[in-house]
Each structure stands twice: as C-alpha cells, then as structure tokens.
Length: 470
Ligand SMILES: C[S@@+](CC[C@H](N)C(=O)[O-])C[C@H]1O[C@@H](n2cnc3c(N)ncnc32)[C@H](O)[C@@H]1O
Image (cartoon, rainbow, N blue to C red; front, top):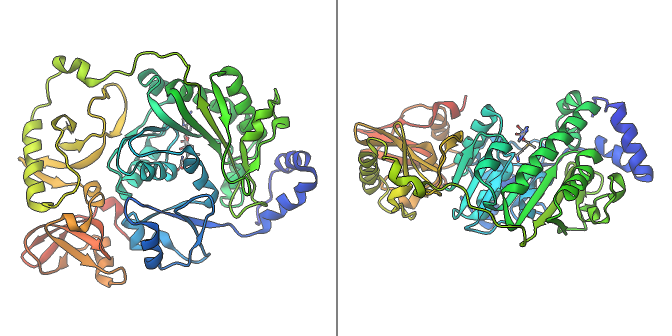
C-alpha cells in the first residue's frame, strides 16, 4: 500500500493490539483478496465450477463464496451480466450467511446498497417469502435495484427510506433483519485507499451515533423471537463493541448468540466497551492478519419471544373497500396473460394471485406481499417488474428476462460466452439472425441475459441502454 494510514488510527490500533499490532499492520503490505459469490438463483455451485473461466478457491465461511486471482476480470464477463455471481470481498460474505435465512421468511436488509448482502439474502430465500431491501440514498437505491434485478430476484421490494420511517410502518414485522451499518470503513483501507481520505476520528463518532439510532429502529421492527445481525467493516471499538454494549443496555429483550467459524472469526473484546459486558466476546472480529479477507465485525442477536405483542403493520386488505383499482389494471393483467401464453408458455412460476398484480402508470409488477400498504413509503420496485403496458400490449422488462430460465421461453436466441456476436448484443446492436418472429430470450451458455425481438431475420436489441457495454 502506498498511501499512509492516518496516525490517529495506527496509534489507536497499536494501543489496542499490543503484541499483535505488528502482524496487523504488516497485513497492509499483503495483496487484497478478490471474491465472487455464486448466485444459486441462477446456477448451482457445482455447475458453476465446471463453467468458471477463472481459477477459484473456496471461502470457508460462505458456501457459494470463492476467491479469484489478481488479473481475472469477472465483472467484464457475460456471466456477470447474466447474474451468475456477485462480486464481493470474502469477509463481506459473512454477515448475510450468519443471519440464517430460511426460504419463505420475511427479511429486512436495512442498509442495503449496492446489494451484496441483499442478493445473498434473496438467494437464501430461494424465491419464497419477502425481502425488503432498503437504502436511504436515492442514487444508491437505484444501484441496489439493478443488482437485485441482475441476480433474477423475484421477491424483493426495494425501498428508499430512513430506518425511522420504516419503523413506523413495520413494527414487529420481520423474522430476521440485517443491519450492515454505515461505518468509518477502516476495514477497507487496504482494498479502497479512498476510504483513508474520508476517515477522521470525528467520522467514527458520527457513525457510532448513527448506528445506535439505526439499531433502535431495527429492534422495533423485529418479531419476538426474531434474529438480528449487526455488521460493520471497521475496527473502531466505538462502532463495534461499544455500539453493541449500548444496544444491549437499551434493549434487554435482546441477547447475543454465538457465531460460527471460531477458527476464522476471532472473539469480540468486552474490555473495549463500557460497560464491559462479558457476552460481547460472543461478537466476532474478522482480522486481515488472521484470515484471507478484509476487516469486519459481526454480532448476532435474538429478540426474546416474550417481547410484548403489538398490532401488525397496516395491510392493504383492511382498506381494500375504500380503494379502487387503478384504471387499466384489468387490461394490463390481460396483456400480461396474453404475453405469457405466447412468449413464455413453459413458465414455472405461477402468477395466479390476481391481487399481486400492481400497476403504477404503465409499469406492471407482481408483488411478493400483495396485502401490504405501501402508501407513503418510497418504493423503487414493488416486486418482480413484469413489463410496460402500452395499448394493451406488454413489453417485457429486463428484470423478467433475468428471472426466467431458457426452457421457459417459446423462442431463445442462444450464444456461447466466447461468441463475438454476443458482445455486439451486449453493446446494444441489432443482429442479423434467423428465428421465428416475436420476443426471444437471449442467453449465454443457456443463462438468460435479456430480450431481443425477432422480426424477419433481424434480432432487435432490447438490452437496456444503461447497461450496454461500451
Ligand atoms: C456498509 S453500506 C451497505 C453495504 C450493503 N449492505 C452491501 O452489502 O452491498 C451501508 C449503507 O448504509 C447507508 N446509510 C447511510 N446512512 C444511513 C442511515 N442514517 N440509515 C440507514 N442507512 C444509512 C449507506 O448509504 C450505505 O449504502
């Protein structure tokens, strides 16, 4: 690393780590580890290992996680565009894994952009249940939405809210919540040297105060008996053990529970917090000198089942009588059905809940939580975006293409990853190509990549403008 570390940071770490400081600081001279996580919504681990153009070594604490070598560029491969994997630093794979999500549950990722952990949580849900992926910053929320779409997630709602506003709407609603908190980013100094420029002791304090508020909101949104994981990518005790100590003091209905992989995840330090509650040793520190990854902190908590029960959040059904269906909804559903019968006659996902079709302007969605009332909440995506309805015809969305498999479509335009024509598709060019007229699912080695519209020997390009390769 060429950029010097802040003195206030190195002095603090020297004081905290004593004899271990030398090993810790030497890790900054070691190369960064690069990782990718295979997306089981698209391809299973074993199959990907037979396809991978990159040499991969497994990450011990994440079943689908791998390291890839310096020089490989998986972000520039068509498999990335097809959502076969998400690029994620190995230590960052730990938090969502520890949350222990089960298919069918109701999950909140409270600080979710750009979506590394949301896509991981969605994979654990396996298309069943509900994921609310929330991000406070509008621009980052859009990136989150795109990543969930690329990974073919059908059951996520993307919101752009403050934790406090969500708390008002969703008291005791979620089975599990991930708080991957905004933090001072000390654990990323090796990987992202710009984090060094943004760091200051004041930022550490500001982040701590923010974390306390975010955790309070998360606590209120968790069901009794539910599970909360708190994670940061910083070493600062104030943002880790101290944020947790304060949380436990304010929320006696929560207790810490043990984390897996003690061979990699070192114990938290009760003596770095006030009060120095001994259970803080159950939290974990991922140290760059003790594992092949960057610095992280993890805590897993359970809310007592005795926590008093209050009413569940507003459901749309309760006020259904008062609300009329938006104009054109019936026609939009009919347009969808006619598109589906013609272009995806073998669709495996049965979209038969009439109430789950939601129309916003011309945009038709299928919601994983049709009973929810989203009024007053900033929602970017209310589930699977099916397409745009114009003149009673549905133009399918990119999200739909990425959520389909090749065997569901009536027409498929297939390419291999090394076919130069595929690059032309990804650049947005129209292609001369034979095939029956109509919407065709474009695939790479059998994995969906986007739409094209076949007409008289031409494949019109419907790869989204904003995603096109330059
Ligand atoms: C560590 S990042 C999340 C990374 C993400 N979980 C992932 O895996 O891709 C923390 C996020 O918290 C958001 N954030 C910042 N201030 C916040 C606040 N007051 N409440 C909630 N989220 C906030 C940031 O915009 C940032 O996207």
